[in-house]
Length: 219
Image (cartoon, rainbow, N blue to C red; front, side):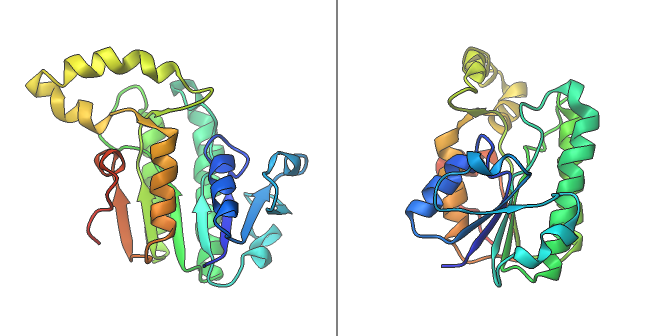
């Protein structure tokens, strides 16, 4: 199995993904800031470094690694525009640079659904810029584009279910409602594991519809 290098490993999705990877026998290296290493699941190699300075962790990326970029602002909201650029975009670009230098086998980027949204426009634009930059590095890449992810500590999207149900009955809103469908943390983790364990493509984009149906799009 290819070794794993992951950013954002102590976050909402990252810590759950790492537990599953370790259970499956993967060799996992996680980039963390000082003081966060204790939040990592057991069985993980912690690299304490600056996620915005590739020179501080480039040498720790294993040969032929699968690089998973999860680092980002927790609980995204419209008021975090500056943080999206200072954290999400900057770390994505740094990761793409070092991943190219390390000649990783596969770069996996957790992006966001791109159907235009006035509320989350800034977040979508930053993730789109991240995707564009990663593409420029010609890395074998997969972009996963969820919308709201329902799970422990992130249960508020459940209140939107009635609105989605109504929207799907309105022809003019049906397509957008599908693109913005709520998915669960379990579905995201299953998709990530599926992507990790499948041959790396030149470029693969996984939308909400793929996540919900548990399928990978054609390469």
